[in-house]
Length: 190
Length: 407
Image (cartoon, rainbow over all chains, first blue to last red; front, side, top):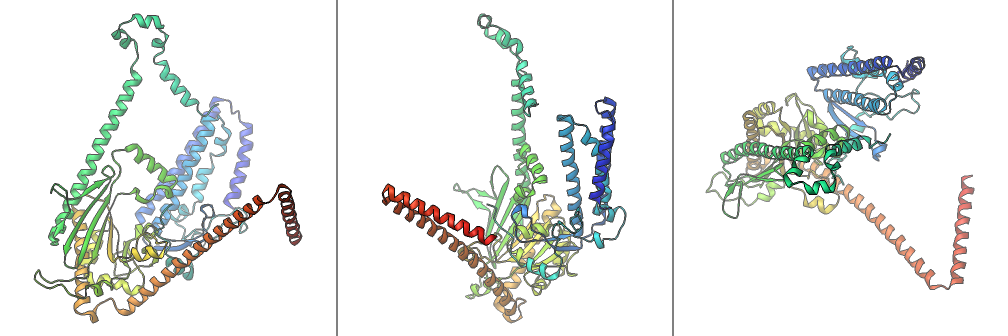
């Protein structure tokens, strides 16, 4: 099942579960807090362990691709990315860890400041699920080969198959050669 | 619940500290002596503020001293290297005649030194950036911001040393030898880009340097595993092995933990946006960019790198002047480099023309608007109304036509 669809299903199930719980009871709140914190910590620990594996492997194979333009930043052309497998993997992992911190901050605001407990319960499974479904975890922790869907650079996941998906990174020789000689570096920030 | 409630609570807590004092009436305060008033007042908040100020001062002193001591170590070592290479002038002289090994700027975060006066080398500058250790709060804020918005403060966040070695095309074998007349000819042959870049810094180096963003990235067995070549054509990759030899490869391996890139180039690091800037900013040079480290092993390696680059310039210049036919840089390579530069200049000129056209169009529209306004002002009130009606009809007609076309 598509991970985003399964996320939706889990959310709906957790909504039903939360309706059956007494969210005013201090005991329930305590257990929900413990469940959420454990899930976040487990996800964080998985990422950190995988980071250790990546650093230990130290794969310095060069990786070149043209990243799709970022429409939000007003880019019209793709940008050449020249990196190593190790740095690419670490960057992907850092993005995942950053999303944990962002989620933690949002949940902290909603639970501690706004006093909502439902979101905490609904989010108590997704961090660990996302961690186990992450491409880097599949490659380094579960030892799956980096081919097919796991070939670097990874494709951005889409909710409805190919429709509405983000443009893919270009890895063909012609695009890379063109981007390599584009002279886009050293642009002074205004 | 107000978003500012924590702040309000904190302000209330501070005010509460002196609740007793503020409850004393004016008459009672007037009756008290100065010492009694001092004793009645709760000075906790003021003492806290003084402690914070003291802490800021301590951080400032310690941070500044730390940076200075690191700079001393770095520039002592580099100056010694310049003396070993027999440079005539090392460092700076003040008006009072004192010698300074380096100058520091921006509260001891930027350091620079300079040397000149040697065969084949016009000058060498060493520039180093260090953390603002005197202001830990700013450092922490920059770090946190860097995690979430890397594009905001990426550029000079890290500590680094950048050495620029510029050749002069003049090779003299000894002090008594005459200066060759064809120095400019030799210098004109340094128009190429040949670089070795650490794999950990490839993306960043290309992003920050215009000259590197024009190169082709290639892995090679002739290089240690940690590096790649970034040259404008693959033939130029042999430049390093030809003039540096096996020792250079060994040195690169030793420097893998500090060296970001070493590049022989003539193009600027900042992308020129006009043809004038393009012509002004071309200067043959070698750029060595390293992470800042002050341990003696890394400093020795940095000095060895500088010596190697100077050695390469010695060999290349000598070859250009004495045996040009056997030089590694052939006319064919220079022709390719010339073509790339011509193409880049054409790109810049194209963008310039486009900008000029847009500006001219804008100016023309502005003038036309002004003209229309002047014409309207000359007319009487009735004629103005008539003109407005006419314009309104015209606009409506246009809109109708547009709607028709859409349908």
